[in-house]
Length: 122
Image 1 (cartoon, one colour):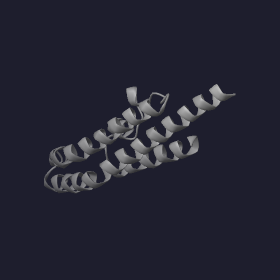
Image 2: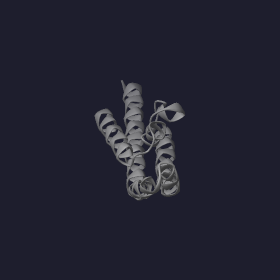
Image 3: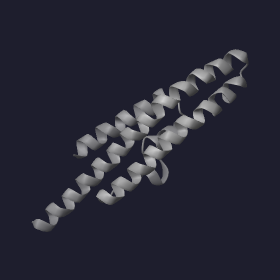
């Protein structure tokens, strides 16, 4: 399960980059950086961290529709339309990245809990 968790985390980071989220936000959406990068110690922590990651993905997708065109408009008229395209793409992709990150955190929690139970039994 540890390998599945890592694979999901990598996929989540790739999707966050596709959504063109800034690198700091990308790490957060993908479960990295800051408090979100803490090791998950059990299933409960995995579900909690996964829920946070999914919520961040939804929020970043929704906010990107507004922030990306504004950022693009600073570069002119064509930048505005580029920002609109990035914002629309982010609406679809950022929640997927958050969902992959959530699955990664839950899987890591299952793996940690399994390890703890196995250690208690031996």
